[in-house]
Length: 373
Image (cartoon, rainbow, N blue to C red; front, side, top):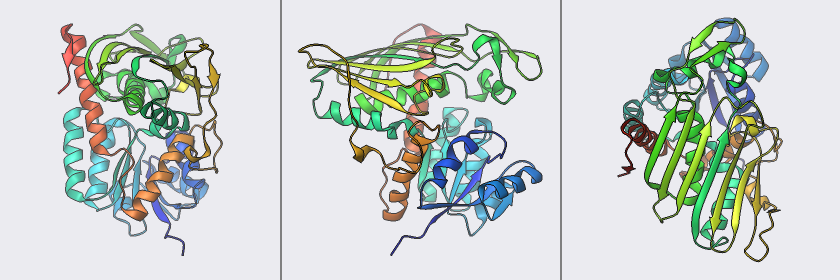
């Protein structure tokens, strides 16, 4: 007997643009375990259009009504970060499982409050750190744990996104330039990249960081309006992992040429490298397909490592699609919801990442090396 479909209500399901339409909706449609039963947007006409386009039975402009609807089992929140706290609390108050995009909240204090509420609610709570489920990252984690590279000695990270290249930014993304919105380079590119690093290699124990605003003004592409950027667009990080390996990372936006990600791991028996492909390169480690390369100490030649089929959790979405890693995580979440297991990153994981970013900010503001508790 087939398990009952998981009925999903997507908040932020604009039919015209947005991360829900680009990633969550294609991911959910690719998985037979789910059905999109409800959508929510800020305007009645867009909500109705989204329902028609995505095949949802119900359309809402009130997030609380969506969460409370009896035909919604899982509430998915894909709107701008400043609205996350209110919407997550509405879903938890309705007793529904909730999947919130990363960052969980504008601040660590907000994230802590939401995590406590989720514990009390007793539901499954998911934070959108989907890079963990990219096949290349999942396989690399197992190879490292199995001693494929020997003792890990170091990791070097280069992550450059194209956002803001040429001094121009789309209107929908302009809010990310403001520090108080909690959705800048450190939070998004930094959060996703550092979470993937720690997922593969283990936690950071101490660090020294520099944050910099190299592009203090930006032009909104649609209007020509010039806006000031108060959120850093560059992160330089020198860190040590709990096992003693050292890390060097440069993470930044506004890359005009060859925006890409490369996480290179050095060990006593060989090396691994996780690299973005051409299509997904400008977007970040969490989006699109990644390749895994390896060497051994005998000849030092890089070779692409075929990824075993067990790391591909869904076949219904193309490997280069923006939502492929989101689909991977939804596939694992379906198993969690049907069996009671808890294998996807939850709000606790999100809170730990928020706290790591706080330590980076503290190091950058004080010019001192910081130890994580």
